[in-house]
Image 1 (cartoon, rainbow, N blue to C red):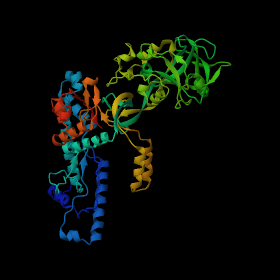
Image 2 (image 1 turned 120 degrees about the vertical axis):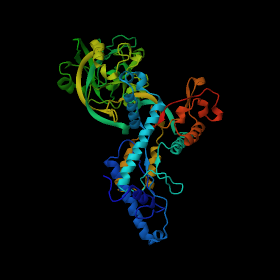
Image 3 (image 1 turned 60 degrees about the vertical axis):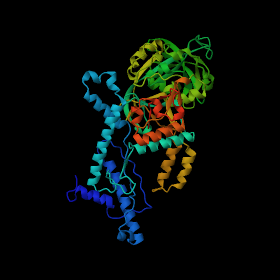
Image 4 (image 1 turned 90 degrees about the horizontal axis):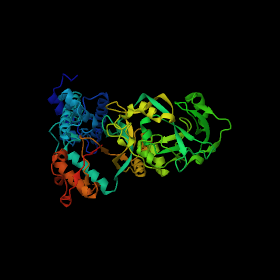
Length: 550
């Protein structure tokens, strides 16, 4: 509830004069800032109250040191706490999309056009939502008499009373920093597996993931080992029809398979496997997985073989196998068993199905083994591309397990429900997939970052250990997003060079100046691409790209 003993104007006056004292010019405190999405919650209140206590305590100490001289002279220093609001990003865009859909009738909402409205429509609604949220949150802070937390047009000299990340000046500064990164060679484009939300149609950062328990169907299946001519290979055991027994919790990735990985540190043996169609074949599994397979996971499908041959995992490396999904374009490649350190016998069979476009470990192992790079088999909405073949193309990835089971035919061993923790989109609560897409990455120089910690005073000291641990495991930062509500990445495609992307410091600095004066909407409202380019780049037919910054 708002206080009844102090009017809003009195609260604003307290804010402008600095409350109980004057600000120390040597003190400054950075604001998070909170997200301009809805009302403040308890976490925001704790954040702001803690900062307020810190500032007031520091000012009291300053007055005591100086004997109150400044207070007696009536000096007003620059405020030490500049509040701010984070206004861009997916949560607000999701609200804007929902508002657009609510305005249409049921038939319009079900159309493709309604699902992807005009970017400027989204941006205008999103900006309005952000402004409203700032006003509501500021009213709450005013009621609490939090110092330096009211958005107002009054400023102390040239210092604004607050900032937001959608201010043109702020947006221009962000792009200026991006240009600095380009100048130092720290921005690059790469295709690598990342977290992708089909429901939001964008890449997600680790911080945008939640985890939920989910029951999925895991599939046990066989891949036939063949010789270089594609014939059934029994070279190791002297018997016909050798296979590898493998397992996956994502059946939709089977068409993306380009390698089977084994461990160089495990010993392997053959077992007799009965498929779901009744066929009996011999298959390789890790010796350490044998008890679990025959007693727990597949007791009716897997039987030990008397005097079964054994070999090191390295002896299986290089063996050629036949793709389990012949419709897939990946079946055109020569596929081999590879070695990977991440393979263990604690789950599965000790032989891992690798789809490098849909798993970071798979990608690293296939790259090290010079295996085919594979391909991303998904579209942005989670449906399967024609690459997988006509049986699955166009289907949503999480619904194809029954069709995959049927299509594997004699290679299918078992389908078993599994309860496990999976990543979900923090906003939509829908499943997240891993897919290899081309994104912009910022190099994270771990050694320099860790060395910089020596110049930071931590309170409590344990904070240093936590931050150092985070930096040690931090990968390069994926800064690109496939959304409309954000600051654009000023990159252009060159049609004369087969669409090669032009990343240039001068282009970004020009955009920084333009957006700093007119706001980031100019990227979407300017008709002629040349008007977004510095003079030296005009007249070449360059086409702006539409990605935004994280």
